[in-house]
Amino acid sequence: MLDSDLGQCDASLHSAGYLLSSDCRPLSWGQSLPVYLKYGTSMTDDARQAFDDAIRVWKQSMGGANLFEVVDRYTPDPIGSEMDPTSHLIGMRSGANWSQCDQNVKLCGAKDEPAKTLYQYNEFLVDADIMINQDFAFSLQRDPAKYDLTSIALHELGHVLGLDHDDTATPQVSIMNRTLSEGIQRGLSSRDIQRIRTLYGF
Ligand SMILES: [Zn+2]
Image (cartoon, rainbow, N blue to C red; front, side, top):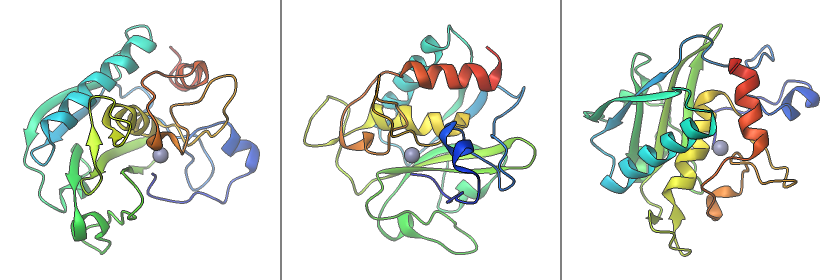
């Protein structure tokens, strides 16, 4: 559920659990928190609710730190608007729009991905956009036959903050576990929390 494969860096750097730049630095927003998010008009009401809930969980887990702020709940988000670096967008795409991968739209979503986070950086992260694959069946109500939107929102927001995947299962399953989208998890592990504390100095 990430837009690039950063396989060049040392395994020990990967195991630290952070998104890495092409020169293997952990990526963060530095002092530029909160991340100002815009909800696109393409989002369903359930998706808006899931992200509201996930933002609240992240905040509570970090002792009330203001990590995200939603500044627009219905911003126009036509295909291609995820390329705008000044707007950190959450939206939904389907069909050919989900897989679109050309110079104008670099979404490149795979059919088996329920969501993905696209990001850009220089010294720090400068843009992050979350796109959700609307061809999946999602639920806000813990329907085990569907994908849990709140779990997915928590995971993608972890990417936005600078976390990479963490498939370690003990002592707790990380919200950044790659197989998380197949289950329901609505809380962060102590490892997830500590990583963000370390990254931002909370
Ligand atoms: Zn992911």
